Structures are given as C-alpha cells and as structure tokens.
Amino acid sequence: MNTKLQQIFDSLETQRNQLFTSLNGLAVEKLNQQPTNGWSINQVIAHLIAAERLSVLYLRKKIQAINEVENTGLIEELKMIVIILSQRLPFKFKAPKTVVENTKSSTSLHQLEQEWNAVRNELKIVLEKFNDDQIKRKIYKHVVAGKLNIQQTLLFFREHIIHHQQQIKRLL
Image (cartoon, rainbow, N blue to C red; front, top):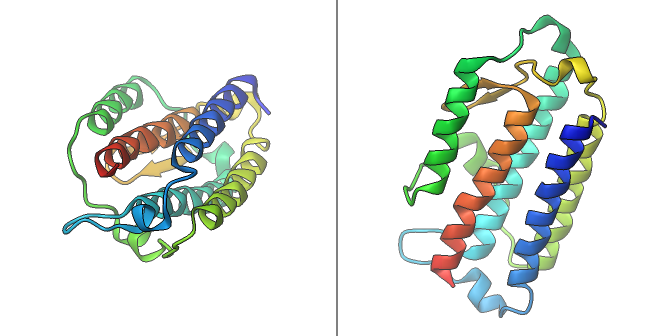
C-alpha cells in the first residue's frame, strides 16, 4: 500500500479502536438509549459503519476505471477545508437517504465492532490496489463536496468520525 495511504489508514484504525475502547463497559441500555430527536450511541456507530461500507463499495467499483479520471487540484483542497470545518462545528446534517436505508439496527457493541472490522478489511484491500500515480485521481463522490481523491476520502472518513464522536460525547 502507498505509504501515505497506509499512514492515514493506520490513524483511522487508531481512531476507531479508541472509540470502541471509550465505549466498552457501558451498559447496553446506555448504548441503546435513544434521545427524543436523535440517535442512540449504537445507532451512531451503525451509521458510521454504513457510510464506510457504501463508500468502500463505491470505491471498489470506481477503481476499475481510475485511469480514465483526472487528478484533483486546488478546488478539491479548498473543498476539503470546508468539509473539515463542517464536520468540526456542532451542526446537524441530514444523513444521505441511501446511508439511512443501509444502516442496520443493532443492540450489541461487539457486533458493531465486528461489522466495522469487516468493512475496514475491505477498505484495506481496496487501498492496496492504488498505485502511487493514482493517489490524486478523482475517485470518490462526496454527497456535498463532489469528487475527491483517495487521500481526501480517507480524511473525510476521519472527520466524519470526529463529528460523530462529539455527538457521542453529548449522549454520554
């Protein structure tokens, strides 16, 4: 795997493991307690998994024609700044319909962790297919920001988790 992608992937894994470590030991009731107009902790985790699972499926399809797309540039870098800001500020966003429809309900943190392990293994397999000269190719379509390269995609995953970690902290 490309060195930069490996570094970002490793940091994503550290972030995910820290999230589960912080939640282990919580009562099942606390993990599944749903506020009046929001998601429970487990629903937030299931949402993150669904978003990544769908993204990995999309990447797996798009990498087949990666040499036919152009590289990202300054515009995409500026979009990433906006994505980072949007995910770090305490704004609520409506999840894309397809992500909501593909979010599984689960009451077990252990089950969610196993599901996310499987998704991350699939992501790793996809990342290993990228050649060094393909890293800047527009491979992923963010629902708002548009086309991003694979590094930017992984950084979006990081920011998406950070955004929802803030939500989880409020629920705790």
